[in-house]
Amino acid sequence: MKEIIDTINGIIWSNALIFLCLAAGVYFSFATKFVQITYFQEMIRLLFGGKSSEKGVSSFQAFAIAISGRVGTGNIAGVATAIAMGGPGAIFWMWVIAFLGASSAFIESTLGQIYKEVNNGLYRGGPAYYIEKGLGIKWYAVIFAIATILSTVLFLPGVQSNSIALSANNAFDIPVLYTGIVVTFFLGLIILGGVKRISKVAEIVVPFMAMTYILMAVIIIVINITEVPAVFALIFKSAFNLEATYSGVFGMAIAWGVKRGIYSNEAGQGTAPHAAAAAEVSHPVKQGLVQAFSVYVDTLFVCTATALMILFTGQFNVVNPEGGFIVENLPGVPFGPEYTQYAIGTHFPSIGKGFIAVSLLFFAFTTIMAYYFIAEANLSYLTRNKSSKLAIKLLQSAILIATFYGSIKTAEIAWTLGDIGVGMMAWLNIIAILLLRKPAYMAFEDYKKQRKAGKDPVFIAKNVGIENTDLWK
Image (cartoon, rainbow, N blue to C red; front, side):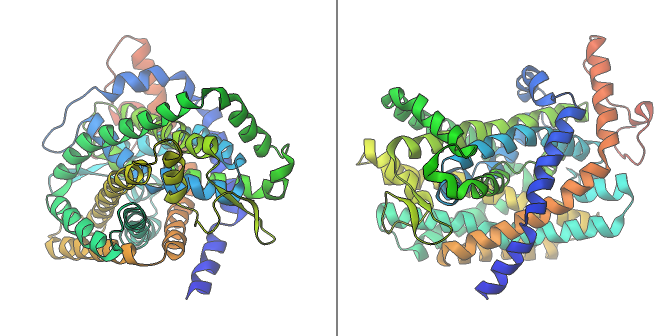
C-alpha cells in the first residue's frame, strides 16, 4: 500500500506541478502589476471592513476561516520537513512561492466572489462554481468538487490530527488514542453547529493563536539577535547553491520549499475561494485583496517565525538524498513538530514541548474546521438546493472518522496522503484560474476605476461585461 501511495504522490508532485505553481504566480504578478505590493495598504484597510449578514460572514470572519485553513501543521511540522529535506535554502523558496502565490490567491478569491450563489440560505462558492459558470465545463467542476471532498475529508485531516497527537505524546506522554478521541469529540461539537459556528470560533481563536506563537518567536529572535544576519545569509546562500554543506540538496531545496509553501499557504490550491465566497462584500475584489493578505500572514510571518527558531538553535537534521544525513543535530528524532519543540526547549526547557503541543492543537484543530467548511461547500455544489441532510451527516461522520484515524496512523503516510490531496486540487484549480483570468482582471479594473473616482466600489456584473453571475445584478 505504501508503495502505491508513494507512486501516486510522485506522479502528482512531479516537477511539472512545481513549475506550474511558480509560473502561475509570476504570470499573475505581472498581469496585476504586482497587486501583492501595490495594494498592500488597501488589504489592511479592507480586512476590518464590512459586516456579516444572514447569508454571509464578514470580511474578517472569511479571512479568519481562510487563515484557519492556511495556518496549521504546515507552519510548524511543514517548515521542519522542508528544512530536513531541502536544507535552510528551502525557506527562501517558501518565501518566493508565498510572494508569487499572493497574486494567485487574489485571482482565485476574486473569482470565488464573482461566481458565488445562495444555497440553502447561505453564500456558497469556490472553484467548482466558477469552473461551471465561468468556463462552462460542468464535468470539470464536478471532478474538482469530488476531488476536494476526498482531499478535505479523507486525506488532509489526518495530517493535522496526527501532528496534534504526536506532539501531545512527546510533550505530555498522552497516548495518541486518547488525543484522537478528545480532538474528534470537540470537532464534532463545532461542525454540527454549521458554517456560522465555524466562523465565530475561527474569528476568536485564529488571531489569538497566531499572535501568541509569533510572540514566542520574537522573544527567541531577540535572544539571538546577533545571529540574525548569519541565519539569513545561510538561507540565501543555501537557496542559490552557494553553501557547500547543502550543495547536495540544492534541487530539493526548491522542490520542498515550493511543495511545503503551497501546503502551508494554499495559494492557488483552491481552498481559499470557498471562504472568500462566503463573505458579505460590495465588490468581489475586496475579498480578493483580503485573501491575498492571508498568504503573507501564513508564510512570511508564521512560517518564518518557525524557521528562525529552528535555525537559530540548530535543532534540525538534513537528509542526504544518497543516504544518511548531511547534518544530524538531533540523532533519532523524526522530522516534524519535534524540531520546533526542541528549538523552543533550548531557551525554555520547561515549556518548549508543551508550548508547541498546545500551539499545534489550536493551529491544526482550526485547520480541520476549515477543511469541513470547504467540504460542505463542495457538497452543496453537487446537491445544490436539494435536501441534503443525509449527505451532510455522512460528510460529518466521514471527517470525524478520518480525523480520529489520522491521529493513530504513522506520520509518513499521513503526510503523503495530505500531499496527494493538495496536489490534486492544485492541478485542477491553477489550470482553471489561468483559463478564467479575464473576469478577474475585468473586476479588478472596475474596482480601480471606482476607487480612483473616490467611490466605495460596488460591483454590477452587466456593467463590467461578466455573465452567469447570480448575485451581482
